[in-house]
Length: 71
Image (cartoon, rainbow, N blue to C red):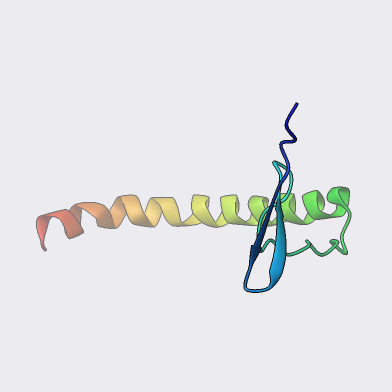
C-alpha cells in the first residue's frame, strides 16, 4: 500500500504534505487567556454592544424617514 505522505523539495527546503500539515503554516501561539475567561470577556462585550444597539435603534427609526425622503 502506498503512503499518503508526500515529500517535496523546493528552494532547498523539504516540505511534507499530509492532511494534518500545511506547507508554510506557522505554529500557533498558545493563548494567555483560558476559554472560560475569554467567554466572560466576550459575553460582557456582547452585552455592552446590545445595550448600545438598543439606545441607537430609536434614533435610527426616527431619522430614517428623513434620510429616505431627502429632507
